[in-house]
Each structure stands twice: as C-alpha cells, then as structure tokens.
Image 1 (spheres, rainbow, N blue to C red):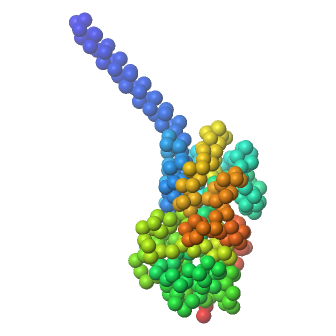
Image 2: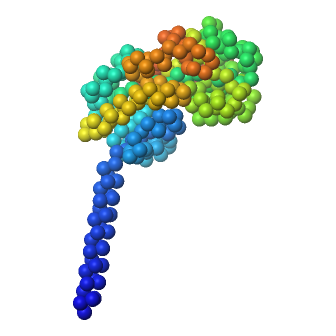
Image 3: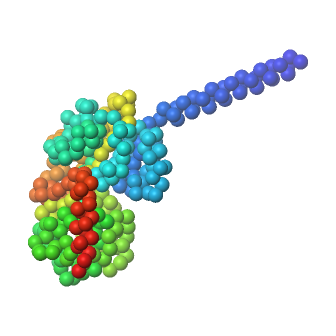
Length: 332
C-alpha cells in the first residue's frame, strides 16, 4: 500500500515539474523579441547582425495576404521597411524612436531625408540602411566607360529591347530626367525588355538582356560568381533606397540601442558594404565608405554619392499626377 502511495506521489511530482517547465517555456517564448522584415530585401551580412535570440518574422508588403502581414507587424516589437512601402503601414501602431540617443549617430544625409517626412512619420522612422541602385552590364565592355559618366548610354541602339528596369515608374522617371534628350522617358521605355523587381538578375543572366538596373545589395553575390557581369555607378548619380526601423514599444529601448551600436563595429561595417549596404551614421569610419574611388566593385564614387537622389513620400495628388504622366508616356 505504501509503495502505491509513493509511486503516485512521484508521478504527481513529475507532473508538477513538467507543468512548470511547460509554463516557463511558454513564458520565455512570449518574452522573446520579434522583428518583422521583408526577407528578400536584406543581405545576409545584415540579417546576421540581428541578435540570435530575436525571432525574425517574414512579411511581404506586396502580398495579397495583407491581413496576415498586418497581424505579424502588430505582434512584432520592431519592423524593418524600405522607403517604397512607407505608405503601406499604419504609423499609429508605432512609438517615437528618434527621441532615443540613437538619432545623435545619424549623418547629415539621413537627417535631411527625415526632414522630407511629416513630423509624426519622421519621429518614428530610424534610418538603418542606405542602398544605391547600380547598373549591371553583361558581356559588353565598351558600354562601361560611357555608363560611368551618365545615363545617356541607355538610349544606345544596341540596347533596344535589352534593358531590365525596376518595376517603379518613379525610378524610371527620375533616370529619364538625367538623360540629355527630348522625350527621354518615352525613348527609355522603348528600350525595355521588361520591368521586374524580383527576378531581374535571373533574367539578365539567362536571356538576351544586356543591362539591368538593380539595388546594389541584391547583386553582390552574382558579381562574384559570373565574370560576364560588370558593375557601374554613373558619376551623374543613382537612385537611393532607404531602409528604416520602427518600434512598437519603448520598453526595449536599451536592447535596441545595443544592437544599433553594434553595427558600427568595423568588421561589420566592412561586411555590410561588401554586400551593398551602407549605414547612414556619422562615424568617421562609416563615412569613409562613401568616399571610395577604386573601380570597379567598390560602390559609388564620392561624386556619384553627391549627385544621387532619394524619394520622399508622395502626396495623393502627386501619385495621381505620376500615374497620369506614366500612362501618357505609353501613347505613341
């Protein structure tokens, strides 16, 4: 009889321990920090800097599963987003982030760009990455010298139907304005093979296309494995893609600051730049990465950086005007 009671007591003690372990595990899981990001936009060197004990939640701003993405963002502590998708988020979900000491680390370029947003947006957006667009040329060395100078080379007859453009009318408009030719937008569009943001490099490698215009951070690995590809940054400047961090809570302020400060480690800065990711911070070492003059695969020259441009958020009226101008340019 005593043996049965002892056995039952052991069983109950084991059950209690199992329950405590389960509750503790659930508690640790619920306390784990979450950061949501559109995975394909971020190079491995950047994703590797995110603390290992944070959960990285994948989102897709262009997905038809918008409700699912909103739920993921709502349940995340931090969200990463690029400037092309700023209008896709609800700023009411986020806390002011630029009241943190972190804003003291930002360089003039990022401070100026934040000034293009309204006060509510700029106080909640922390610039964490800057990616220049670049021109990738395949098997056509004679185009490189002219491409280094300006965007005019895109109108070459040799490139008719052989250029892969970003799927962004705004970027194409901005490049057309740099080209010294009448009706430059219409001429530029007639050079297109296709407009694509996802598979542009696969198309370039596996088709008759000769040129692709892509974010630098998306192409560095292809340059290392395909000797046919050459990288060019026109001294006339390039479009810039900004990446921002948003926070849903002030409670994790110290943890967030620790991560951001860790990015300034010289070895991390070097890895990020090697994969086309520039930190918009004002430290001397980081700023030296904007002044490279070594060609061909070292990023934009200082002159190119000085002439490059960013894209502030459009008003509704500006969106309508852009759409109308784009549609009008389709008319022969």
